[in-house]
Amino acid sequence: MTAADRVPRALRREWAAAVALLALSTLGGAAALGPALAPTDPIGIDFGVLPRSPTVRWLAAAFTVLAFEATFTYRRLDANRPERSAEAAATPADAYASLGLPNLVTLVRGALFAGVAGFGLLAPTPAVAWAPAILYGAGCALDAVDGFLARRRDRTTELGAKLDLAIDTTGFLVAPVVAVLWGQLPVWYLSLSAARYLFKLGRGLRRRRGKPVYDLPPSRLRRPLAGLQMAFIAFALAPVLSLSAIRPLAALVLAPSLAVFVRDYLAVSGRLPRGDD
Image 1 (tube, rainbow, N blue to C red):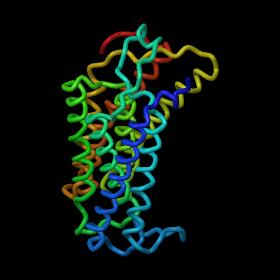
Image 2 (image 1 turned 90 degrees about the vertical axis):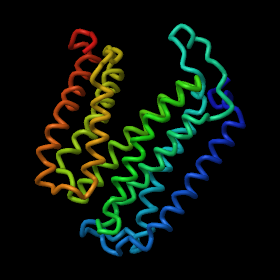
Image 3 (image 1 turned 135 degrees about the vertical axis):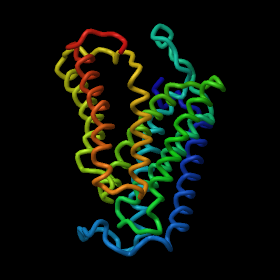
Image 4 (image 1 turned 180 degrees about the horizontal axis):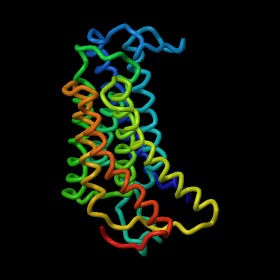
């Protein structure tokens, strides 16, 4: 039986309904934002391929991110089953027939981050200056909600873990890019986004070369630092401080996260002794 055969039809239908609802909500957001969007080129650059309508530009970026998130979820619907130990995983459990409220909340987070991405193709204006910060901040606040619901309802799933990480990574990519394009973060802050992909690339290359790849060691710092980054990025997106004032704060917040990425790669490649930090 293939992975696709293990996905209940009811689960696929619920996925389609959830994606359709999020797409309609995104269209509604575009309609609400439309009068406030400025008909100007994003950050003064026009590559000759962008539509003139600012609403269409916002939708183009938002739907691109939303489509990625929807596709990511669909391809992993067979993982919508309880998280199990390594021994129990040898006999895969049946997938739940419903996404469950925790995963639906995670998808809402993804839609909010998709909305943030839409502003990357627009010039900042006073009318929408706070919008990226509000959308990103709301998505980050819901990060605690989906995990709480999963534990409270005993619905921690393999899909939920994968989807939560993917949505977090998406937010860590699109939000800093928008902040840089809007002149609210220095360009070198994008090294945070790059570090995540370089880490995955490094692990993948080691596997392809037949080199050992170890599990990530437990860490007391990883999650708190991720929360710190979320809070700082939301703050940086808000039109509160100038770039010159944000720059030293960005360096202070970024340095420990980059250090943890380096530490983690050295650990998974076997160059560091394994242990809890």
